[in-house]
Image 1 (tube, rainbow, N blue to C red):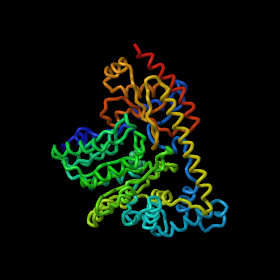
Image 2 (spheres, rainbow, N blue to C red):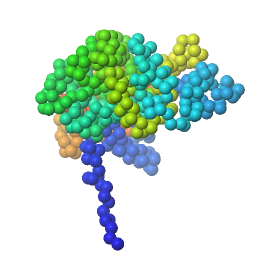
Image 3 (cartoon, rainbow, N blue to C red):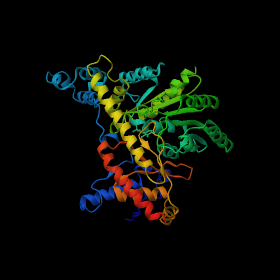
Image 4 (cartoon, helix red, strand yellow):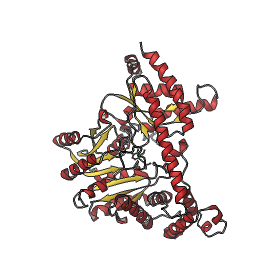
Length: 486
Ligand SMILES: Cc1ncc(COP(=O)(O)O)c(C=O)c1O
């Protein structure tokens, strides 16, 4: 009997769209780090550091952030419903958590946290999210418009599937971008229409630049369907002014674009003179209701003072789509049957946390404030450290979880990078990792078109670790500059 011995699946024969996109926060730099980690394990003491510090991702708990007790109490009880009714539970869990868990369990199918739920998410949890949005914005939100999701990523992918029909469909995205957007647009066969944020004005968004990009892309035959806005920004850390948001709302309304508002860092704002405003709130404040503008807002359990990224929870609120589109979105969501229940519960708790008068309120607030003030301290320490390095200028940190310092590297370093066939930021980031064990993402992974060199470093390592990292960064940088100064 003859049979074909060559494997039918090779990297050349898989979906070419998968090969094309890159996702640098988890890319080559992480492979390099894993290799060094193995080296430390096999030959302890062989490297100038004892551990790898993963500053490539906003992964709060991996870097020492403590979870909020109330959230974990409720999760624990929801996973063990008989506990809610045992006397010993009163000594172990707060009355508030017992009450909330009982309410949640009663709304779960079969009163179990292991059931499939509605593909849109459990109704009572969506109600909690909608109430939280209404309280945050001062404008009504409806559970019918909420889809609970496995993190914001799955919601963003789902919206790309809905919006993109062919390569002629364009999606406006900021550059530098969060590379999930470029990857998802490629995977779903659309065209990314980039607009530049301006580094020299604190990574501001100039509406005339967006307009220029829209006009150019329309002239080249594209149908632009939506505009992505990330506020607070990743990797650029800026918080948009309300005037800027109003301009975007007016622009998208006039041009018939859906606003895809990535608001996953809404609880990471560090500046006194700016506050987070949702795009939906800005639109409603301008008097535009769902008939006049379509907005899809994304939020997540991953960031903020909660940092529960491994739980994969989130929501999208969809405003301004017709019932027929909502039915199609529901059908698409139902392909993965339902979002995971722990994530659904968590996002409901984040949007409806303990309130004044609740027994758990004081502990909740104390834990929240401790994390938030420590984040500011850590951001300040790292910001100061980067700015102290020769030829490095660090952006202001207004929000989100990253610094994005600009590197002015000596010409000799740039030619050394060229000889290795990599860009200068990639060269620098790998050298930094080899010398210090600190993993940062080369800025080119965020596709800036400025031709400048950056690295992205999260502010999340705990205060002790930052104190340890800073002298290592400084010593490395000094040696690097000396080597390539010429
Ligand atoms: C801007 C932005 N949007 C979305 C996500 C995805 O978040 P999630 O963990 O909820 O999928 C991230 C994660 O880093 C992000 O930075």
